[in-house]
Image (cartoon, rainbow, N blue to C red; front, side, top):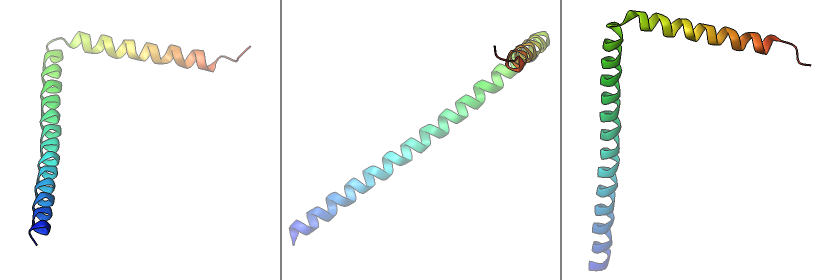
Length: 77
């Protein structure tokens, strides 16, 4: 009888450990998401100090997309 009780206790201990590990993983994912969001907001705030950089990067992105579209539209030889 004590053998089955020991097995039940070890199972419960392992189950609690697994639950605790999963909870820690979820907590860390949540923390990383908060940190990523805070970093994104901080970077956006810094970019707002330099609106010309936003316009320049936007225009550079458009030019790159247009160039790749032209290259893909040319017929193959």
